Length: 248
Image: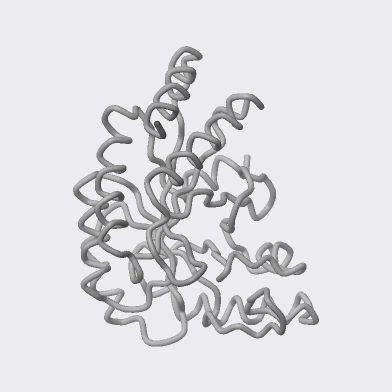
């Protein structure tokens, strides 16, 4: 039923002469791994642009070497060290009392560690998708091209924002595949929302976490990437291009 409803929604898009725009972000990379190799192989075989959100908390020499010969991969800055400095249920790197200048100083230090990576782009992805009150202004102060969190449609500005919307995994009770039905229903809802509001070109972001994928997650990701480019008739764009468009 989920595939049927998705196909019906896509039929409405085709009738309007429109084509959905998707993009792909994978979080929490630090070093080469068998899981990263599998992720990069998937992206290459399906010719799908991938934004790899890398945690800049150590020596990234080995990761930089692994990424040296990969195409269609953009490296973004995933926080400063992925350490929770909050109290309470909501996690975040920057405590609420931190001022703009302190946030900016930490952003620059993280970028300095990441800049050596091939395809590194000055794009920020906050861990836990946490949005500190001073973050947007601090990113502008530091000259970031843009940033990406969760759930919003593309937002213009000096530091434009393009978010992810479809998480492959569910997290409560331990990381595991969200399930085909839930994922496809979420995608259908995102498409329908854009159609009804006339936001045809607003991109839809796929979020993955290669280090915790189970067998079902890997299998579905393979199926979905192939289907989206074939029968699905969807367009996959690179995050830097989407941010550039959002900034104009």
